[in-house]
Image 1 (spheres, rainbow, N blue to C red):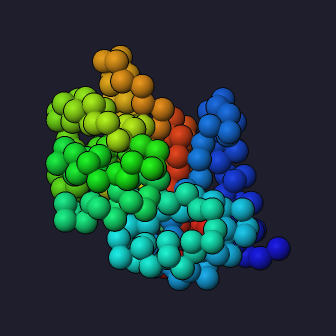
Image 2: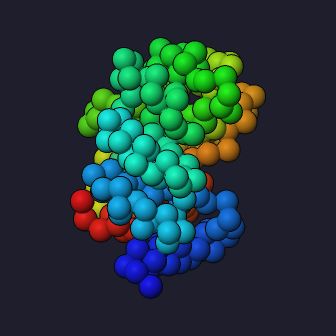
Length: 226
Ligand SMILES: *Cc1c(COP(=O)(O)O)cnc(C)c1O
């Protein structure tokens, strides 16, 4: 067993335990391995250890790794800020984008998605930490953005992504994650069919799963400190 095998077993056990505690099935929770700053050899070892979905934050770094690992059947997720002049390679090389917070970016991704690929899976990043960060759509603007994105032909709107402000206050974290789930539920009552809540990282994945997360984005707990 390599270190990554062991860490993967530990994280899968954490997910299973959190799911059981919430009376949910662990099968409905995807483990996304966040690979930013790690070299291709680490990603290759992670793939061989059974991790198949990788999330990257920085476009050029991601493109270099996608090329270096093109012999592996990896599902690539883009989880960093998307700049409007960089949408084309994102549309071409990723299966998912988690960090959409403006219609213009979504429109460009839809237009630039190659016709031979399935629709690009997207999540809207919801700003749940109030003043402390500028990224993410505000709750008041979420509904309009979601309905507009849902109409774009080459995107598939899957759900919401959120990242609370750094805190060890688990009650506050639970409230933040619950607000994302509630926002998703409201959108679904408005006629959307969102199946994804991308929330929870190494330190707070159990709290996120208790609040309905369907996809946890885990770096440090799988691959060590960056
Ligand atoms: C880095 C990062 C993660 C993973 O964080 P860890 O604490 O290392 O698990 C998850 N999501 C996003 C958006 C990130 O940038």
